[in-house]
Image (cartoon, rainbow, N blue to C red):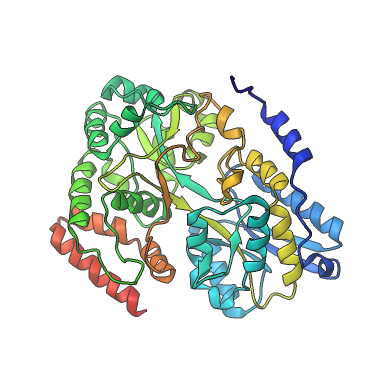
Length: 449
């Protein structure tokens, strides 16, 4: 039987009416007497998303007699990270904190355990994603809960026309906006064939652009690429394992790939790859839909040719970078009950559907069952460009530094280990063995810190 399509408006109306009636949390009784609540959320890239989340929060505050203040703190210039560090040191500040990537592990001693909240959510809606557990759970205890906004993934964002014309690759056929994939075609999208395509596109004047500087986008695509070759820096037991044949294979690959990338990638910031694909000079990047969304606004002809799809596969599989946004409550908060109750409210499906719609599909929920919103099926141009943004095939979501203990992984991420190691070979001209030796020395320093 053919599945009947519904519009996003119909979907939201249906889910709002049918939302599971979650049992009241153990904190709601004291929320009414909590007085004031201060919330720190990430300043969303998508225009209008903050307006929607603020309204949901303010409506909850009004209904519960809580005076809520919301601050949206930008990640530009690491202002969000500086704010987290300052509040931890001063033992005062916001009650609810946005904690990117692996910052939960770094600040766990100052964070309130969240096992009760996570248990409440998973009992109602099922399990969270593995990257959420890796981000928020330390030594068996949840110190942060899945954030209601901002988590995003790093798929390929490619120009359909350029890949077809210059490389003979029909990406829309390989990764259609629907469930009927050809396994043989998907298998052909591997790093060997990707490199061959990049050579042709570079010759035509449209290189692939992957940042290799000191910014999160660089970690999110290089960490996944190294893992696809089977290369990890530190294993789950805390042993340094970077000096391996797998790492050498990944660096050999990057040495060749970088010849067909823009020379300025070492100086790019998190906005540069977006600018690259929007400009019309780039054939592909790895990025969430923020670049596409800006192109819809400013360069509609380019936007109508962009397709979000799976990363290439390597010898060890197919991996996609994930940048999680978890929410924590400070131990020194005076309003823990109200803080947890607000997070419980925002993580219910009715609110999550509204927030996903407001972000136009940029946010990928960390609760598995919420990844069925129609925004990814029907959004365009081109129609269906976001269908494969939530992984549809064999891709594994991962955070750069996995599977190291979270505190070590945080250092790997923050100190740019993967792009810096690549740069030692491709920019500084060091041998692969010398680059690995440098990286191992860096890792030893992380372990001692």
